[in-house]
Image (tube, rainbow, N blue to C red; front, top):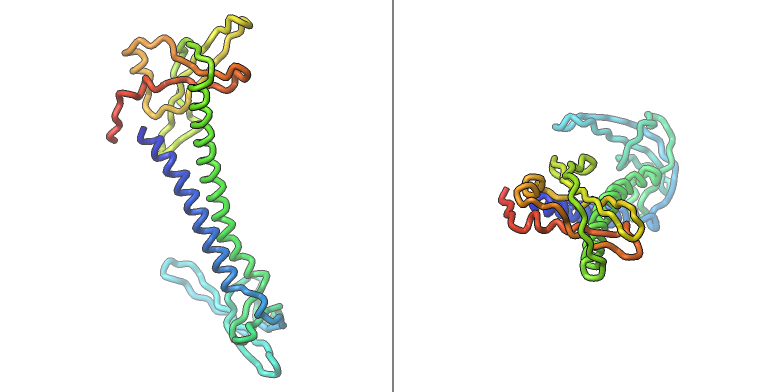
Length: 235
């Protein structure tokens, strides 16, 4: 159904954003902060100025004076910290090939937040995709090799613990009395993005086929394809 496709698309988008953020973050960090060509020294903050951008965010400019081979320089720092104040001495580095280019290693590490956020997106999206793939493989395997049983339909419930695009899916609940151990087993279907209750009543569906692992009854799949096979979702 449409929401199911949207659900898959969301996981894919999360994963793509994550990969892009991670790659860009590390490439920028590697190219901009190559410390092999940097020399550490002590600098003094000479001026801190600030202004607001068009989006009303405040931006700070920090100027630092330092000495390189007897020559005094004053350059703008590429970062800012709330602990800065005019006259404060700070550990900085400068580029051997371009002494006007300076930075602070401890603040450079903040740029790793970018690939860090990307990694979070990648984990979320990748996990969602892997879970989907794993469920599909399990469903396929159970339908090919599992034991087929028929369970009585109990009710349709709204899965309020899960939501995509502002909508909750539905689950079909079934029960089965196992004649081998005289125990009652309850089963819940996968998420269904169209309310199946009316369809079940119209077609007078009393039972659903369930494919179950003979050795592990916690692995099962309720075959609910009959509920959506003739529905074309054009929303």
